[in-house]
Each structure stands twice: as C-alpha cells, then as structure tokens.
Length: 303
Image (cartoon, rainbow, N blue to C red; front, side):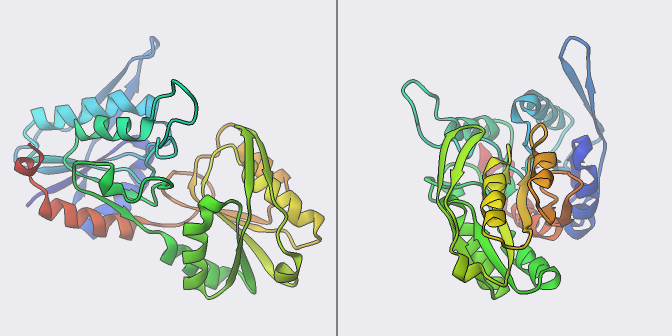
C-alpha cells in the first residue's frame, strides 16, 4: 500500500513529522491566490492506486472549503485509491445547536460537506459539547485523538507545583483529564458570554490556588477574552503569573498580544494550528490514528 500526504502550505512541517511515523511520503500541494479572490490548487499527478490524505487545519474553514474540495476531487481524477483528511483542528463544532431563531446549525452541515469529498477524517480534541461523540456526527470513519497525555507530560516536565484552571464548564472535559494524568489539583470556573469579546469569568477559590502555579487550560483560544478575564482575576487575587496552555491556538486578530499584555507568564500550544507558541507536537497521535483509518477504509465502504 502506498500512502501519500498532501499538506496545505502551512501544514508542511506537521506533515513532514507525521509522514515517517505513518510510513508515508509528504508530496506536493501548491495553493495559488489570484487578485480576484479565486484560488488554484496544484498537486502531483501520478496517484494511481495511491491512498492519499490531505493535511489541513481548518482554522479558516470558509477560505479553505473550496480548495479542499478541489484538491480531493483532483486527487481522485489522478487515480487516488482513497482520499482522507487529517484536520488537526476541526471547525464549526461549537455551532451544534440553534441558539437564536433562524440560525443555521453548522456542525452537521459542515460534516456533510466534508463527507462529500473524503473517505475518512482524523482530528484532535474536537469541541464536542452537546454532541456525544464525533462518530455520531459523521457518516464516514472518523477518529478524534486526545492530546491530554502530551499536555500532562509537558506540565509535569515544565511547571512546578501546578494547579490547573479551566475557565468555563466546557473546559472541564479537558482540564479534569489532564489534571488526573499530571497528578495535580484543578478548578473549573464559570463563564458568562455576552458577545464575541464580552466575557465574564467567576473568581477561583483562593485557598486552593494559594502557593501554587496557576495553569489555565482551554481547548480553543480565538478572541482570547476568556483567558484574559481569568488572568485578570488571578492577578487581583495576588496569585503568580499564570501559564496558559491552548490546544488549538487560533488567536484571531491581536488576541495573542492581548494575552501577553494581560500578564500571562508563558503561552504554549499544540501544533494543531501553526503558531510561535507551538511547544507540544501531536504528530505521533495523528500518525497512529491515520494509520488505522488508512488500513480499514476503502472507497467501496464510502460508496
């Protein structure tokens, strides 16, 4: 079996790390942008009988949607036996219900969109709040890897006397698992969101956090407001500057600069989305999950 990874440009370093672990080769995918807003994807042509996986973190899904479809269709045109996608960050998972009248419920709609192009999907820590599991959303084989073991290992090796802090109830599933694996205490706060950049977070228990190094853990940092509010509370309580750990570092606009200005001692992230804060590689997790789906998925199953 021949395996080929076709990474979008920003994912080339991650694909180069995953490929040897997967027994695959990282091939050529070029993405050209035209002045009129259209784009052109170019891939290598000799794909007859090859099992292909695109590598693309979907942190800008609207921009990537058509190029993803074009690349997958072109790979099949060139003879690819199957086409999967390794998407370390999976977008639209937070829009899993109709919050206001007339809104689209985007999570299942985006899943249907991806199913039309791909035989399987691998991602990392998808934001599943009201969706019980990823397989209940998709009709193709999917695997969501858990980054908790790697984050726990990083905390054990880099933070002394830590206490983990989850900034909202949705973070509980990640924070509790990481704290258990790292062997440290944790707290989960409550959050009230009034808008994209208007967030209020509850004050943590000072008794539990006293004389410990606070480590704020969240799965996604987009505007950064939740972490910024938490940092502000910790500072008011007289606690040491916190370490911030983010699984998916979107950091829209100036969110990263604002987090630093808010007093974060250190900001680290996984490499699910390329960013200077990347300190925890998830290449091995993605390779293991992809190897399983490469083996067990065929175009016949997709039909």
